[in-house]
Amino acid sequence: MSYRIGLIGLVGDELKADRWGTLAMLAQYGYQGVEGGFLVGDSRQETVDNRKRLNDLGMECVALSCKHFTPELLDAAIENAHALGVEYIVTYWGPAESEEQLKRDAEVLEDMAQKCRGEGLTYCYHNHEHEFTNRFGPKGTVYALEILMENAPSLSIELDVAWCHFGGMDPVKYLRQIGSRVPIVHVKDFSDDNIRGRFTAVGTGVVNCMGCIEAAAAQGAKWMVVEQDKPNNLTGMESAIAGILNIREAGLLRR
Image (cartoon, rainbow, N blue to C red; front, top):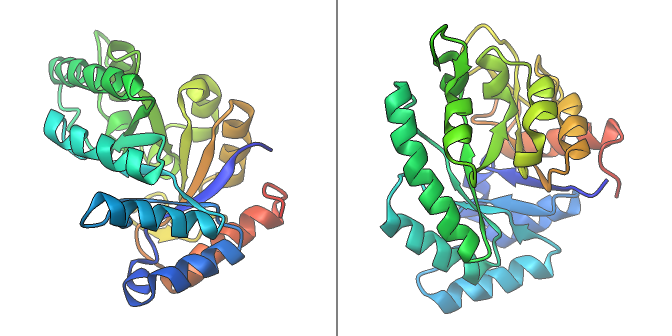
């Protein structure tokens, strides 16, 4: 299997207390990358030094975020991505309130995706549930995410499988449908899919996380990133370890 396994969030307190010791422990359990901007330093040299230290652990930075659709934020993200050796930049929110607004946003996202492509980077959009629950078109059957994808053909998707599931779409089926545009998958689980925000460690809930990994891998996804917005009965570090151990136990990650 050619994909790599990463982590986002969960261990923020541990990183604040002991950044490099925490990252070394994650590497020991098989994590190959971390997503997020916490390795961006106060200077480019500090950022480059952080990259080397991370690489020395056998890890890399998966992606950086650019929350709002603004050229200024994108320019900064591109600069930091080059310093950290990052391939992906991600926008992780859009309102998806109307078809017209989605098309306007898609125009901006397309411009940003093309600019990233010119820099040797890939620009991605991260979904939540509302890109599936909000539907438009003559019969109200067109998902908001589909409108973005159709009108921003250069845009890639960082698919969050739990929010996809919570939005009423089978994420395994959806990955089989659009997987060629999904280089990064956020592998996340819910303990209850009727109540928003009931998170649990990957592989212990109602989302078919292992099926999602298999489907995404078959479509050529590069990264499977474990995520849990908040711990459940375990600590953040315990949840991160449980997630990767469950993936390994399912035979989907070999050491």
